[in-house]
Image (cartoon, rainbow, N blue to C red; front, side):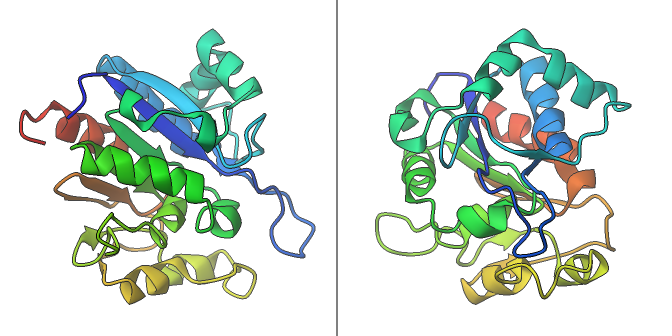
Length: 229
């Protein structure tokens, strides 16, 4: 694994929920809570978004001290103001990439070939790939150099079909995340709706929903701290 002690958070650039007119973006808690776990463990955290620039944000709850600390952090504020595009990122700089959720990811993560390039390179260099909630949308088209899907045969968690139904968005999102991951060969497991659930399979770390964001951060720290990870 690279000895960089750096982790890249991947953010959506998509800001509308289909044709509903409702805004979306990356879900703040799903970036902030892993960021806290990673930085507390001594990792540097960088950001990237599908299109670069300032990514759209959703779900902010500034009564949550972790979310507030994330937005108030001068380094994060600078990075959020102008995220690089994937093509401007060198995968060799990172120990891991974490696909942050938010409904926007369902529209732009699957076709984000630049993010796929980064994740493939990080994973094949011995690093880790992580994703939380809708972030695993970035895994549905993620193939390794041999053409196989990264998730094929792997245990994963992601926003479930029943959670999508509970959110009232089954007919709005372009595909169902759980079902599509299963079609790619993933062994999906789910907890009760909106309960924390984190799955680690080797160097792949996934979480089901916003409640899983802290756990994903903790699990990623553990994976990155293992000498043979």
